[in-house]
Length: 396
Ligand SMILES: *Cc1c(COP(=O)(O)O)cnc(C)c1O
Image (tube, protein in one colour):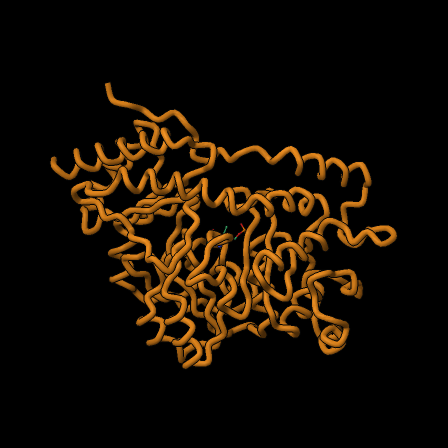
């Protein structure tokens, strides 16, 4: 009898009791809107921002309605407008090119390497064609950030980081989101903290922070923020920024504050699971493990491996056989986008040039979530299933 996995790849942990109690208190107060506060209570959203800035070591933080909203706000705040080109990863998720399209700009895709990070040589070749890079740390893989920042500085390219999969990660000790001018994060259910929907933006730049606060829909109440620049920064921008409402509310903020305090513990739990699967997959014939560089502190909330140069039918067969044993693999090489996986050539609103080297990687790329509801035994079992089915198809 073949072993079968019976867990659910989309099942997250419950919201912590402390967060539920805080949320109930906000609901009892009726004061859910972030600016609907009394006396000297700053409100949950303002407190959350102060705590997030402290966690990331940034001067400023803004909590917003979603990660995608944070990305679009960052683009607007650095001055990207209709018709501008924005460099971004060919391997990312739909909200990234979507944020670029939301401001009327046009993505210019940069290739992906076997390490699943942006191809810095390709970036250098294209860097003179745009002023901004929206760098997506897709599936938590960090590129050589020192080299990337040097290339961008040499070409005068402003970097906005998409840290939807790297909240809690770092490169050479610098938190992800703190290399570029702006870092953006998501608090959506599948990311590293869970408020259903939600996002953050961090920066040290006074003007960018003030513009972002105004854009998010602060009216003239920006003085209530605890992680925003002083009034002078707002004087300079307050008549020029449209209100594009996308605020964080006190209810979600209440749910998130205790989760931020637990983030470091959760990161360790994810990484135990990641290493268990990784160890189980190592030395499987035909399968390439994605090695993590020593400078990278990652968050293993998902894992990827490559079946490089396999015929599509055989990859499909691996996916089918693993699914039959309860192991859900997402394949980035499928002809049609499905679920959350789509490719640069599926975003037809964005022009793209053919990228054969990236296509080769995506054609062999398999991806799997590792929710914290999985035990280490679950992870070992999942790795045994994948190993057995990849070996069987490889040898057939
Ligand atoms: C989830 C995600 C986002 C956007 O987050 P939302 O909060 O869902 O808008 C951005 N980039 C990547 C890579 C993501 O996975």
